[in-house]
Image (tube, rainbow, N blue to C red; front, side, top):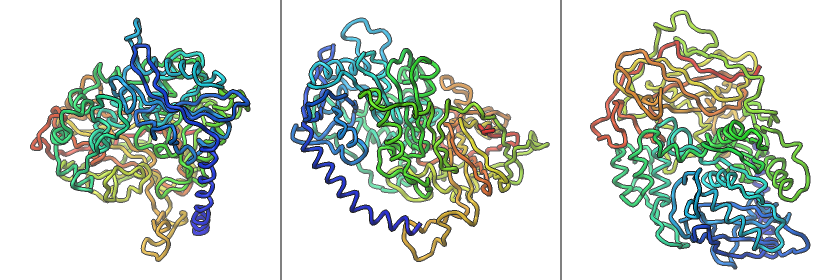
Length: 625
């Protein structure tokens, strides 16, 4: 480890020199054109086009549509495409296009968050993001000189949503699309809700602190004002602020989407219209859906857009890539680790060179081959190895029950007294379980693999673990949490965590936390409780997201839900752990633990609750045979 750290320090100046050379090359070999393109309804959208000066051949077009600005503005100012693997596209002669979506930055029109797909276009006034993509592509292939008539679209997160919509545009020039960590379903799994539980910290930071929700009355290159809370400890800030109406008051009347969310507490037609998985049919371009297994924002999107395309558009040439990444890490030069956990190789570099660039080269330039790109390319953590698979989930997985038992045991065998035996904890909204041990201002991306020992020490977190494993156990697919519970009140949240417990000795970076050594080497990995997957369910939605129902106090009730997919090997000598709790703060808003409208609750509505978790509770694990 010390040698590796020293090597990284030595290479940093080399990377800086390489980037400097790439930036000089890019500016000398590319020219920039800015344009406004009239959509079918007359609204004009802004694009920045970076064109190679080499006119000896025709070039493909690769485009990103974004609500985050295609800055810098001005034809003499260049986007820093040399900072990551995008420079490789430029060296191959791609025409790179960045487009401000309707109603954002320098584009005209009215902006709408996750604008619904319009299934019934009859006139030029019937627009959506797919039609705007069609009109933009049509203008590009007809007006940008020396293009070869082949267009690709890619984008991460919100641009991933626009990429999904692009795949439905139907333009014949669109040959390949890559939705990466796509915003997909903001009620069930991405960004702002997971299984109906409101991810307040991400939503408030995005719309208020980051300024994304500010009104945009006319085209402008000037960013919206940001907002800075007085307390730079997110746990303390959200606890002091209290119930959600207090955040809404800070947000103000001008944050349209925030206020709309507050008035759509259940998964109604308004939410369903904004579910990008609905209607992904007759997709014509080749698809490369990319996701991060530890993406704190859109872990759900990659897995589920891929599955939706396979189910609803089976003739589509559809591929999946899932790596051990935080949000956007695959476009980062360093994909060697996340937080304290090492992957053993640069997974981001491997992805760029072996999957993404060959994918676009083949479909847009007609060079190379995609035969080596599997249907599903998935990195299995623990084993730390890429698997090239003919399908996802793999065919050789077996749903396997693992039971929460007495005395903190976790076992593949059910206990005899499971229906009468239980563990108890008290969930207190005044002292919610933190999502991370450390103090943060922004939500940390590392919590997805963080050490969970801090939570295991709390009395309001139930902990179960297996004996030391005598052989490897590999999981490949979705994990199902199936809890049998009894509550003292009428509502509760349930957070289930699947954890890999490292051996006490023999783990990498096995050092004393007080050792006098380099800071990056200080964290003790012996006994590390690596979060592999965690997910929350707002209990009222256990039977229906659209029609929530209260718990009957003291009645045994099943809470069953699906967690995002897992690709992980629990190695021989490790243990499997499960933790159960009822708050995950301030990542998720607190449940008042009463069946009331949480979005309009008062501070006085939050009450303690006694929760019994029975030993008939289990997880259903997708175990590879």
